[in-house]
Length: 365
Image 1 (cartoon, helix red, strand yellow):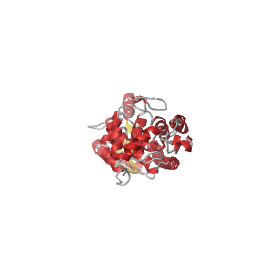
Image 2 (spheres, rainbow, N blue to C red; image 1 turned 30 degrees about the vertical axis):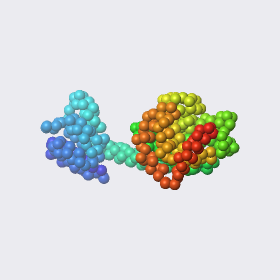
Image 3 (cartoon, rainbow, N blue to C red; image 1 turned 60 degrees about the horizontal axis):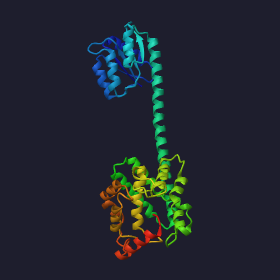
Image 4 (cartoon, rainbow, N blue to C red; image 1 turned 45 degrees about the vertical axis):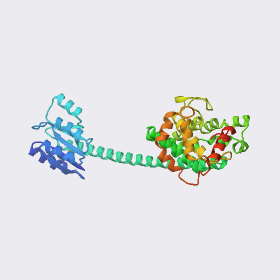
């Protein structure tokens, strides 16, 4: 361990080098000028500083203050050597950051004991700090693994749900990607956007509770059947409720709110405008757009450009105008997600007919 000595007296420095140098495991670096010592401490580590109080140009208290502010190791233990009996000097040194005091004339045995004790304490503190750093790294790695596993489980569950209701894994992936693009364009915090992206695949988890006869029905739903279908947001919120996971908490809010409408005509609560959670407003645009562009048991896919115009048309009624504006600004990136030339090849007449039919079936995205 490395000890730095600062005293303007060469005889005192020689004495200290001899006394401290006999302690096993310690090397000594001595200075008679405080500025030279400070320069050394700003570029190299030290484990203990012994500093005299009375020195020209810079006294010990001033040196301690500078060490605490600017040294490579600002928390090192510091022993002040002083012949001053004035309590104000010791108080000033303590306020500056002195750890111990050794009175002059120096008793070799007392000095050796104090140095050994401080070195042992400093060594223990550094070992504890190193263990803390390692523990923090281990915890961070474990949290990353948990987050990765949580993400995997969400995507696998969303795939399972997609198989049941006739959707595809690509649908949930596209909705999540479009939602993230909209959220980012809105200027939402990057962490919030990431959470929306991870939670979005569970937006239709409530459809697990909808009977197949209704969920997969190719024709128009009856009033009673449509009422049953409208229960899936509340079912999804119930399934995902009371989680300690921020992602699942977000997923619960999205599941419950993504069928609410800006004008208050949505369900299940009839919320309007900013009473609808921002994540629900974002996912509503992404989900409806992808649903329009996707084939379902009750409809053919719309051409993407026609679906784009439908999103714009519903701004201020179905959708938050700010979300639609963000959607439009990201349109080139969103359009690229649907670039397959044969994916949406239905002619205009058929898409118009199916659009009219889907509006009458009572189906929901």
